[in-house]
Image (cartoon, rainbow, N blue to C red):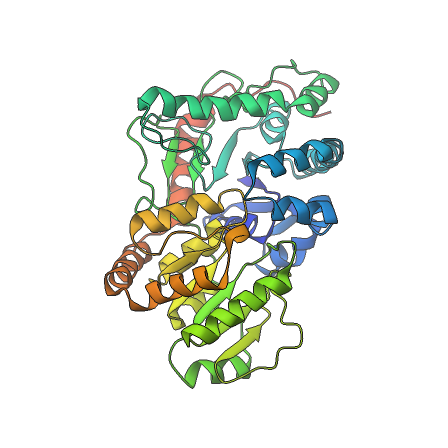
Length: 438
């Protein structure tokens, strides 16, 4: 089976799909990942096919406007004002991305399209090609339930009706912002109304949905249709081909396990200030520390390595996290999952998006303190959080126990089993489209 996986965003939006793609290949499938050109070497490193999408989104994140948007993430009003000013730019960006993804869909001629929610138009492209599609995502955001609200909404005591409506609101917002999808459908001879934006296949049945998180974190609600499932996390083993620098291995061997600090591909307005806050908190608490620069999230400036602090570019989480005492990060799904898998307490300092959501879950599970939004990050708050994760034995025990449970899951295998079952028993019976690409 030829499978095209479409995903857009940062490294955290790509890496889980590489893990899923590897397991699909091991099961006898031909897999191509369609994503930003920046990640082509990463995709090919793991033996998967690559399909081109421009780097507009990544380039935007490095612009002054992008940094303002990330920096304002803690303020809804400022974020909305900034977004309003940038709607024309976002629209043009979306149109170029849709054009690239459509070309990739035509060129790859897939039997199945798996897609990230950011991949605008993917269900419509599948409809035009006459092939099935499946949402593959790691947030409870699109499949309605009365058990909990959609990600980003408060769990207010307003009953099941409110929780159900949060998902309808998400879908409604997607439909209202679908001008370019309607334009594309009209240009390609499809009715302007997109079933994909309503979570439906062309015949009106639900789009199947893989959720790449663990049932130990968010159990699958009992009112989901059989077309939706929670598989477990999609972890990528990066240890095999990675050799740690001697400076890092020596640092780890010379003292107590350090605290890890890293914000991955995300950065705010002033990474240098954030780095200074971390360094001062490390000094006050007396912990040893590994600071990962990532993609500009932290800036060492003129810092000179010491016996208690080391800066690194990056390291596979699966290799490093089991060797640290606690993990301080932005709260991206992948980093959160890796921290939980390692059985360590997590301190979440979220910027935007799903990061506050995972921060609240960490606190709710008792495996980390209250999240500290980036706009409220201070030396005092960070010191208090470090003291908690280093000295709360109950929290550390809960983190270790949760890690043990996660290590027994195999999310990618569960996902492949669901895909195979649906394609052989359900998908072939669904009217997935009648028109072919021209």
